[in-house]
Image (cartoon, rainbow, N blue to C red; front, side):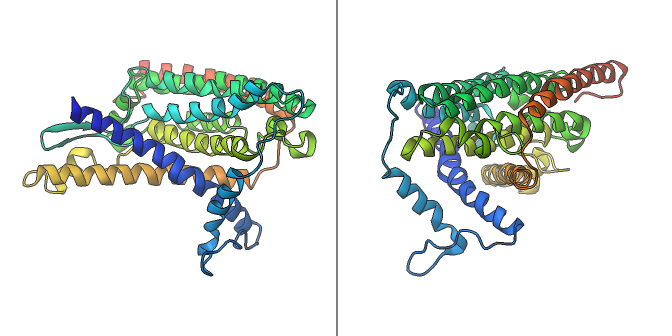
Length: 363
């Protein structure tokens, strides 16, 4: 019992440390540095420690310190309770959703079975979408409670956009659920042990639709109409400063990581290496002679593989963010309801026909 609690605590610490301690701070630097490289600029490089700038990495630290000590401003006429609760409602769902995403496989270490997922739920895929949808409340409450017309309009836009793309995004994975015959993310990853069973091989149209919906759900360019600076100042978080502002900022980056992690699990084999099964990897690492150390090494390789895949998808999202212009609001809504939603329904029909006819052999 004690060992199980220690294992769970270690996995929770890893997940939250990876998101809050590593990805969230670094993505702020990546966002600015990648845009600078793409626009032929130097980018942030002023902050230094003893003259060392380390390509601008100290800016993340200096910005965090600055925002911690900035004044927590609440506008006159605002609802203080809701204004304070909104940033937490935006950040917490993104973190909680990550708890059902497997970042490794099953390993046996000194007689103890280790499953690298915080919570192995039979309905893990549904859990992610259900929890992620709660972030809409944080955005809407931020816009309404600020007592600002621009914030309120941004909140309305965000609510309509997030609701619209949640419907389509949920439908994009139905074909995968039919193919793998499970809603458990752990089971879906296990069935992608062979490279030819990876979701991207058979369901690449679903990947394109899912990725589009996920970026729209996260409200990032080209879908950032809820916070369009040229129209709404800063949208739903116009009246936020200090730690509350950084919570919204952090929530956006954590959602980028969660989107990428779920995409890796559904379409890119999770922690699996291409063309190498877990059993082959453990055997190649000397599983017969040193089973514990072979499993430990395989665990490290699996976690590293998962992180590398997540980083690649994060890079793709960042590239899209600094490449495409912002859509008009009517274009965003039309794309969701008139193109992505019908395409998702058509793909479900195609997958059903493929499974029944044997064209898509299920793992």
